[in-house]
Image (cartoon, rainbow, N blue to C red; front, side, top):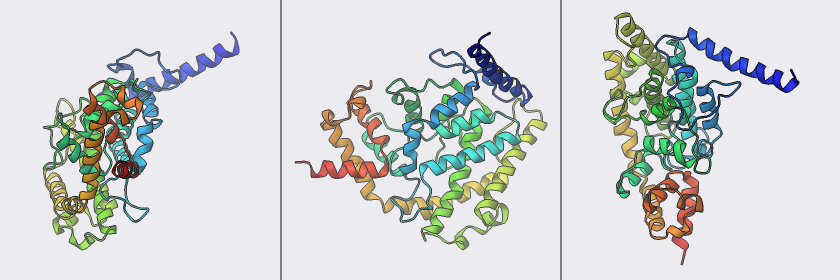
Length: 351
């Protein structure tokens, strides 16, 4: 046996060992060996499981790197410590992995979904999403765009060819603005995907409070007293309280003989989390949206301009299937805040 063959065999043993270790996970965990597969067949990686491979592909995308310069809530904040889409994504991943580990589920799948869930988000946070939803005839939802990014837009139009489980989790992570546990928009088929959805909410309702206090929009003492009593007065305490409750609720549902554990919250914590989100909506989100008409005008102007001047689109977007308006949406939704402002200035100064 030559050296190359020996190394290849050793590397293959690594993947097999990792797949074998998944046998010690909960019977409810998604196993990489039992994935529903990829749209295009690929030979297995010698050293990584299928879900690890997906995680790595997502991290190395241009879309992932651009999250660093996409707004979470505050537009171009004057400070280095406000969250961006990238820091939000990392916080979601950390919270989701903590819950997954406690329930003995598949951390690799959880991490891949978490890191990919916001790849399709617009510049200027949900304000940019709202505008594209208004102006594009087919509407716009960032979870669907995230799936489009990994399926089509990345890798020079070939997509990432991710596993079905990761794609399902990315598509079904969104919620509505009334209930933190809403299931009307979609429910992931795996528990790992459901965990990412709830971790997304845990992350943003806590870090948005932190950022709003830093911005001077609210004070710590403004938080509802019943929220503080149940969840705690600090960001760390609230996250810990929510994570512990989610894990306890899932374990209790399993003990009660449910077919699968339920990813949710106890009634009291569920009600309190919704109250906290309602507080944020009234005191932070509505105010932030009301002060960001410029951001909305940027997105509207760019959309109208490129629909009318399709020849000005970068070549890679003109080649994407779906029509001019779809291509314009792909281009704008992939922009960072500062790039959108730069192109807006160019468009407005054009003769």
